[in-house]
Image: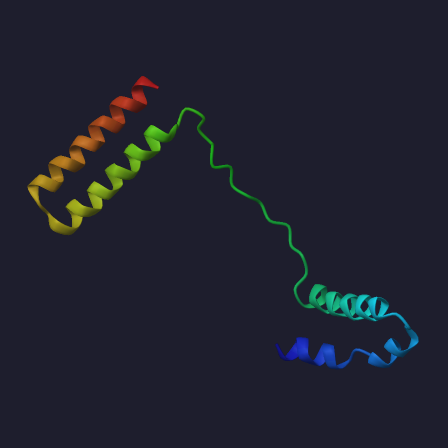
Length: 101
């Protein structure tokens, strides 16, 4: 923030006197602030992951995988036999569904 403040303080606002139109003054100020922002925080190239790496992985498989993971977390937390059976049920269903696809 200090760097931004010091760069804004360095803007020669006296140049705005040369502009008669308020829009021209605004464009000058806007361009100066944009230059400061680009200097302090330049644009970077980012890459976006492709969520559909496996086209056969449809909504049903995603839902089953989520249910299996949630059941595992619940079983791991409770160590209950019932929760273990639910986890195993979703594991078997997920494997059966993926082998069909």
